[in-house]
Every structure is written in structure tokens, then in C-alpha cells.
Length: 330
Image 1 (tube, rainbow, N blue to C red):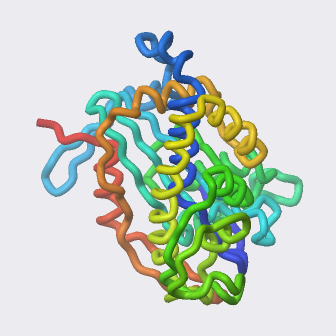
Image 2 (cartoon, rainbow, N blue to C red):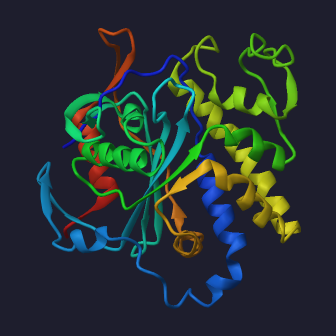
């Protein structure tokens, strides 16, 4: 188990399933022809498959479970580089687990404030220990790119009792406005009041978000509605559903649009997945059954430093890990 140390920034922002839309849309449309030649000879999914081949078994409530094979796990991250941390904070975290055997795709939303062991780096960038802190802070150590993403993937693995994170795909939250405008703007009815940030964004207004408005809508939490991360996550899910639909329509009508989107978003993305592999993974999983999104139950508390902390319920955490990575032995 490893951990990270850092204080949560004052500007808590998040992105949401936006990254799923990016991965799926880029994969399905930009690489369709190439995939036709690869679909019967897919690339390996990740190094963790060898590591998991020992089929470890566990017993829970009298039932024996074994690790499932043919899984690919991808950690999606939305990174806030305005948090005051050197490497930024991973404000949005969602783990996608693709099962080629059962042909299912599962999603786990991870609260950014979840307390878990994170790796602490010294002033010279060396690992100096571990400490329990908010999982979002793990990204603050490192270079703000690959190293930070690897530390965050490590922290998520720690949280999930050592289960592997095969790949990561991170998007700088500054890319939200660019993607929103490429879709032509997203129309929403504001259930909360954002007028302190933009006078046009008053509660009850129906408007098409453009530019910074999209970023305000997706990232704002404090002084908006009840001010909780959970409420913001619901708002983000609704926004992304509309965004995805609009991007999907444009890609189906304009073959060059996917290329334009890829070029526009590239400066905002950091990933351990090669472009060809990402396309292949998404293509193979596009017809899989998508199960209801999972989350871990627990308790929110205000820490001694005044920042929010989320403590996962032990039973809920264990059952979630079983759901994602294990199958019942019959």
C-alpha cells in the first residue's frame, strides 16, 4: 500500500464521464478502418494479465471467489492544474473494467476525497514514504504528467486492496471548454445558481453553454447548490450525456470531425495507452453490456485541517472489489 501527501486545493473542480466520451468517440470513429483488420487478432490488453494469472481465491460470507481473467482496467482522470499543487489534483476519478469473457463493461466512480495510502515524494523527487490522504492529492506529486498519473493509479490500486490498474487516461480540465464548443455548445436548464461567476447563468435559466460557461457548469462546487461533490457528480453525468450525444451525431455526419477532435484535445491528454491499443480496446468493447455504475459507500467528515475527507465503508469496499475483479466459484 502506498500513499500521497498533499492538501486539497481551495478550488475543487471535476470533469466526469467526459473522458469516457473522448475514449469511445476517438476509438470508434478515428480508427474504424484500421480496426477492421485487427478485430480478429486483437492486441494484448495490458501487463497485468500475466500478474493475475495465479487465480487467487478469497472467501467472503461463506462464498468462495476467484479473480476473473481477461480483464482490462482503465483509470480515467480529470486533472485540475489550478489547485495550487505542483502536479495538480485528480478531481475526477473513474475506473473502467472491461471483461472480455462475460462481455461486460463496469464503471466505478471514486470520490476525490477518499482517504487512502498515497506515495510521498521528497524534495529531490525520490519516494520518501507513504501517508493516508485524499486520493486526489496523489497527482500533486510528480511532474503533472506521466509520473503524477502513475502515482494516482498506484493510489487507486491501494484503495482497491491491491487490484491492478492497467492503463490511465487523464484530461486537463482546461480542455472542457474546447470540447464543448466543438459540439456546438450544450443546452442545460440550471437547477442551481452560477450567476456569481457568470450573470447569464442564473438559477432556472435555460441556455446553451459556450466557452468558459461549460467549465463553470462542470467544475463548480463551492457556493453552488448544496455544495457537495455528490451533487456536482450528478450534474456532470447529465452534462456529459448530452455532450456525448452531440459529438456522436457530428462524427456520424462528418468523417473528418474525429480527426479534428483528436488534434484539438491532444494537448490536454496524458495516457499510458497507445493510440492503436486504445482504439482496439474501445472497438472490441463497444457492444459489451454496460452495467450500472458502481460507487463505494462511506462517510464524509471534515478533517482537522478543515478539508473534506471520505472514509470508505470496509464492507462496501470489499464487495465492490469482488464485483469488479472476482467471480463466484460454483
